[in-house]
Length: 346
Image 1: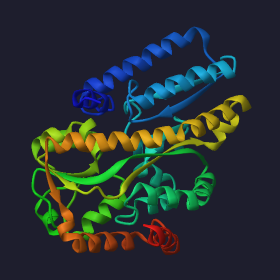
Image 2 (image 1 turned 90 degrees about the vertical axis):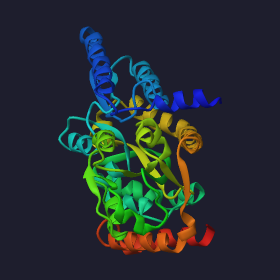
Image 3 (image 1 turned 135 degrees about the vertical axis):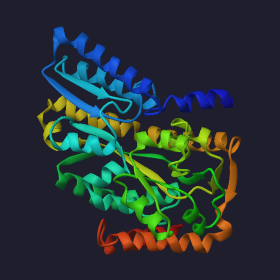
Image 4 (image 1 turned 90 degrees about the horizontal axis):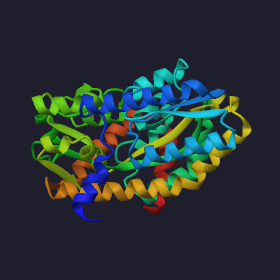
């Protein structure tokens, strides 16, 4: 794909960068609601995502909406709150809990608020490659799905949003360098907070929508995220360096409240599950491909810093961070199981 087309396709994911993103999505939702007013379906399935309506993911859910209407003779409507109009992930979780939303596509931050144990997949330095993640999810997937079930949610499908890197206005080569910068800590992300603290740094806690303006003002000058996010949110325009190689994986999943899913006609339930199953590999591979392309695009704009010259120091910080979370977010035994799976094969 030509680079200009690549950047354009990735930027379709852009949300939360400006008020225009919110307003356009809000107008689309308002128009959709008005068009349905004369022929309201029996049931609404309300799903939220940070991805905008015109992203690949947004278009897939528009197609699912049409299919659900067909298989239920118009009795079920999938109402998509795209582009972050329902709020950031912690707000979306709160709305699901109080019944204002029925489901969401979440990253580990939102998933961890529902089931803290799932954050073992995001434990710093524990899973650092896609094959390792696939292996762990294959072996522990049923256990994690059971935990979501116990919490009142059905995990419909997994997804990935790229490998984690450190992006900064400064050269970050050693963990000690984080002590001299102002790294962003996503509010509600205990794994990010633990990593920053293990490095002895002072993070600046804020929600994702605030990061762009914080980079503009200098309130923060460093972010830990995937290339997809950094390019899509246009944070790269305020940054200078990026680390290599990529580290852990930004894990995501599609979840729906069990009681709301059970209330839908069986045809709708079956179609939602089957559609997710049919497209799971496609979206998983697509997310990984886009992250690789985004990383290549950013490598043309930012200066790459090889952090593995200080590999032992980084691994020590990661180990301290994940150990500090064991017994609080996930059990030590669960962490050990993941270590055994990864240690034997990767």
